[in-house]
Image (tube, rainbow, N blue to C red; front, side):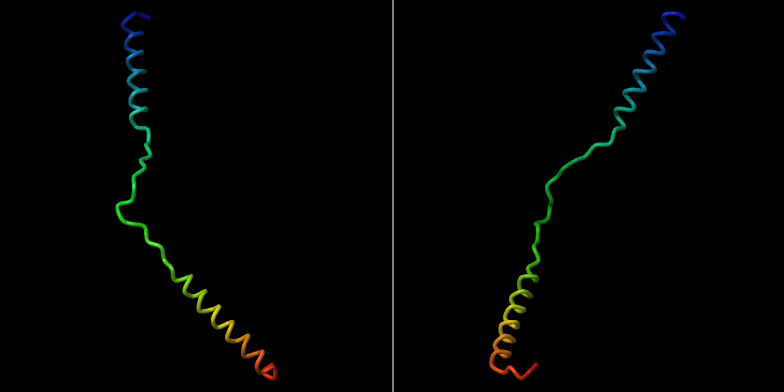
Length: 67
């Protein structure tokens, strides 16, 4: 095999490696453009539930004949 053939193969392999390296997927991390919102509906439902449970406990204590 001649020097030109070896050089040609070497360039071909080097070019293939560069093409494969250039096509490698990349991951980009970016900060969100919109602000983060937190839904607080759960807290409100819990407060209402606690109030209702306390009212029921008082009702059961005051009138034990309900059940």
